[in-house]
Image (tube, rainbow, N blue to C red; front, side, top):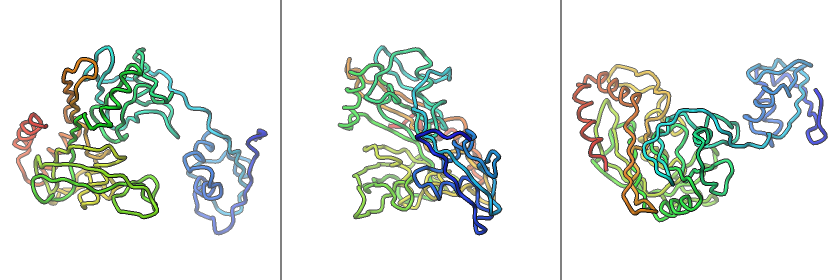
Length: 340
């Protein structure tokens, strides 16, 4: 395996106590400057060898193996145009609103450089704002990968700045639909818990106060739309835009979003004696954005209907609990029509 001057080959020998450990975990533990994701990328690129042969990320060590790795840096990311279909809810000469599907990352980042919303936007062949970041043209705000729904995009730098100012001044109304575990007490409420990075798990946020960490104020308002199969369907108004805010706040109340295992939800919900299949995402959908157009002053009211997979999950939940699924569907249609 050739080594570059900037990326010398590192060598290790697996000890007897390493037997059964995955190769990627073994290397990530010995090279703290590399994430496990980056180690896996190097393995896939053929830059890791075990006893002279190509390594495999999932292979388990037996002890005594000679392991070599060339920890090359990632090539610079760039946003490239890709032909990916997008559902456009609203569009004019200066901005557009997209209905982002669950599972789509908004922009390129560590471990992912294609298949993003930005790649799809560039694939439409239109101008986008720079926003100060070449990897995020047009992106004024974000949704988590697992969250579906409305997302606002700027086509030029002036509009980007104006929309950013509207978000900063909380002049854009943001409404979500969430299904949470358990029976939420009351019919409406407000959560005001500060949010910061979880020091025990860096991919999570937390609403617990940690004196050594930075926390930011956060406010989430909610009202009950329906109670079904031991869960509660909520309309959620987001007044601040903290990372994972809705997910963190309801987890802190011991009502995690259905399907959100990162924040404590069960992998499979039960309705009565029926165990439902895994949802495959968490039940959180950005249903509506309302704001005054920065150029014209006209009200833009962009709505994304609840995805079919989430509607079907609610039907299955109701049926499993012995409730009338058709009546539930009709009630949801009435509630969604009244979403504020």
